Length: 448
Image 1 (cartoon, helix red, strand yellow):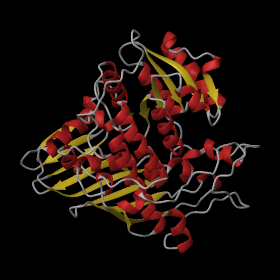
Image 2 (image 1 turned 180 degrees about the horizontal axis):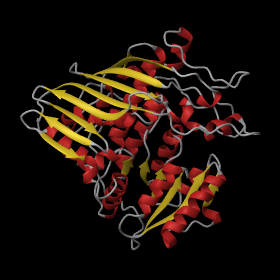
Image 3 (image 1 turned 60 degrees about the vertical axis):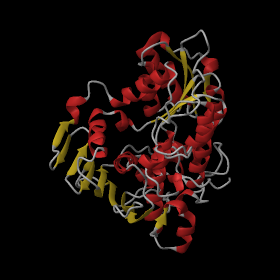
Image 4 (image 1 turned 90 degrees about the vertical axis):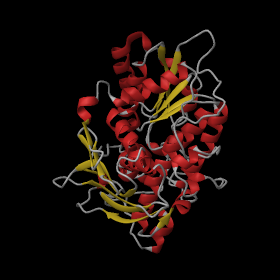
């Protein structure tokens, strides 16, 4: 794949500066002015927005439920998954919840690794909610077919995937497509109010930032008898880097995205450490259970990042910024508190008359119906790349620059997608998967 063109994604330009230019590069606001957003989302004379769901697990089913709960005429017309039981279970639940808004007969239920292409072809808007390793090829296909998109985060797990999404984003803008990305905090009252104050200078110039997603390990799915290696890794996808990117990419990305939003730009380098502190079992896969990364922005500002999946430890899901005139502490579901001469606070849980997961769909579908520009893929790319750069730093033990991360040729995906295909990471005779060894030249080459 060609290397990305020189653009603000590869240079120390902040979001505000980007918005003052006429650049069409990939870092900026979700609403890019001056683009030719003229294409209607659905056929003339029919205001029904037809939806295809790609990836019928919990998050995909939740996103479809929210899409079907938006105002106006909507209909789920196609579904795709590699696991037929996931599709059937999701379909039954959505049909029970939404009745006639769900119309997916057997000939529009697609199963297999290429099922997404068939489902996308039938829709006006596609929900992409498979494991993140598939996101780049699904985004590329949806854009090539001219479909509006809601893509769950992250949008890639490695440098080649990011570059594929970057190219798709350029084409999506040319086609006037609307694209939402699953960073629901951008549609959450407390975060929106906090960002307005921060960007108006409430705490002065930002001098440092911190963010955390420290908590317990999520679900795990033990290996079933008779599963191929590909089937098992897809079944237990959270624990394989080619599928989830490690939890710094799949989960902690939310906090990293907020800090980039605060800073209105992306970091230019990262360094840190991580590993697996807990005794490991085979179903723990190949990911670390903790990461600690220090990010540096173009103006020298530092951001200190932690994420951990270890029980009985200090937990926090929050973001913090220190400025020359005060500081702000933000906790999703908790209190947002700004101290200093412009003191302010808000209890996030008191300002959720509607879930931000619902609001992000309301906003996207409203933009489609009213022919308004709507494009969140820019900061989706930026925040995903921030998380990938952090993982590259912890896995390698090296200082990783933004340009190195974006241009990395390390492709985590298997050569082919089929049930008998072999992923790059395979278990040893004890069923254990190797972990990256920071500083080991062999591993540095494999992860950077």
